[in-house]
Amino acid sequence: MRTRFRSCFWPSGATAKPLQITDIATNVFKERLQTIPGVSEVQVWGAKRYAMRIWMDPARLASYRLTPLDVRAALLRENIELPSGRLEGQSTELTVRTMSRLTTPEEFNNLIVRETDGRVVRVRDIAPPSSARRTSGPS
Image (cartoon, rainbow, N blue to C red; front, side):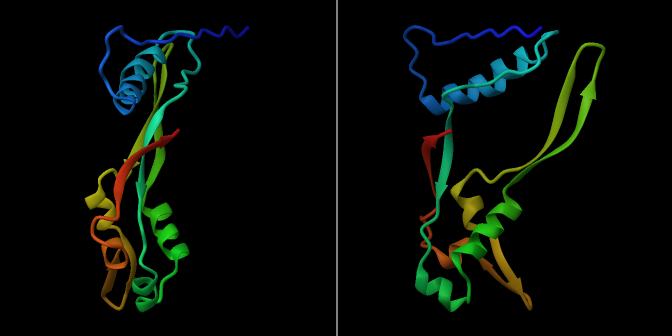
């Protein structure tokens, strides 16, 4: 038998931004609630996430013989989160993850798109230096 419980946490007079609330809900409440015996899943609804925008320069892409698909492939290859195991107790099971997420504009700008014959092309080489920036977006 499956029982669903829904709850909203929003302290009166709270001044936290939506991204901060999502972080607290995911990293504090969710982590604690999923360790309660009998809880099979905890979902955070209405979460706000960071998004990174990279404005590629078509001329720079062409000069390196790259396409937007090459940049996409590099992002998918390098910006990953892999399951790496689990911890089990008598009544608790937790998944352990390997995090390799890019989170800052500097990390995105330093991402290697292609390496050929010792020549490295990074995101900053095909996009203006401040083109990678954080914005909030839908979850």
